[in-house]
Image 1 (cartoon, rainbow, N blue to C red):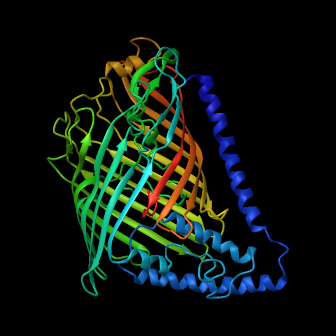
Image 2 (image 1 turned 180 degrees about the vertical axis):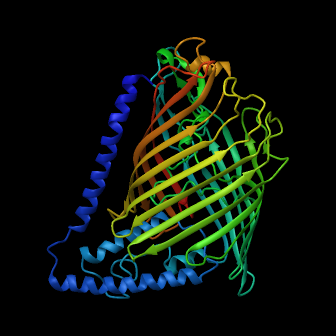
Length: 541
């Protein structure tokens, strides 16, 4: 990016985030003061109902701790949106009496959060469930380049953020203590967003096996998962309560992974953005066996062993249908926590750690990677205001075939920090509205001396002998509006639009180990807008 582009984007970032924050504060304040002229008896009634709700929430917390076979997906954003709307509704309008159906939720004042027993009963219904989703947004992009190579465009893609797909799930009770679950899912990625580029508007098309697992659950002993599934630490460094994961989360490379970075005079460097933006790094998907404890005081602990694997039923470009990593094992642990604090805040956290000695068949370097990652998310139930911090790090093998020619070191640690905050609540009768802002920082220590990369990034020809490291940044914001079908909970539509700006700085050194200037790399800007249609799908991304 040019110096002016860089300075401009950085100057705009803070005012933009501040503006979004001000908008969120204004919206929540407006909701709180909506009916300040309510009658005194209505306020007294509201206070009484609020106290009753506090007791009910405390009771729900106890029920949550005792319900060891509860589903471990605590990020039900729609239920939280209802809860946040209901927490204020008692103070903003005349409330229905207990058991009254006047507000459409059997007198519980809209407090249908994820710990609500009725919602849990729905999750535990026996039998088969078929679900599907279609997510085909428009990706509008500008790489700020020049020349004959396309430097801006609009592509109709399948979003890698949450791809289209279909799933079949079954839950069956064996006896009072044991139950069994089965799940098979397919992800259909037609021209998916992380495969398109300036020179390839069509990208790749893939039909990939998402899950093929069996889950054996005991009320007091926990559950065992066997098959093609996620490992215990997968996703622990990518969790939030913002209700907008259909559009944005810590996997920031999903929007532009295959696009080429622009450098000197706006020309292509031949290097892709996906080589620098690592995203969440904990765990993987493949053939695993995992164990999870029952939920105790909001905590669950899991462990896995297996090998990462990707299985494709269809794949363009002559690529293999099986991507295996063998010759070793990936072992990991995961910890999950979710609870309501002070009858006002939902607090959720994740932590994972792993060790991976598996490697691809054509790998040049031995693989011994260790890493960790985690997330902390907080949501205020009364307003829907939320904030999350995601972070992770990976330590690579200390032996390699091609260390840096100056430092003599192999690839160092990859680290990232992702922040996301906003508001999610029912501003209207359509369904939850989520507004968010996000920021990502990544750090890599490549110690790379490949000439094509050095020649593309250096300012003065032949000056650089090694790329010591790099710093990656992204900031963005967006909105997601969910529409719930009246009288048909199995159908929902999510309408969304978001903006992101990506930037990169490279740290180059010469043969003597001294810093040398790099070319001003261009920013990459993108807007993603579209609709996700869901049938029997809970919207967990």
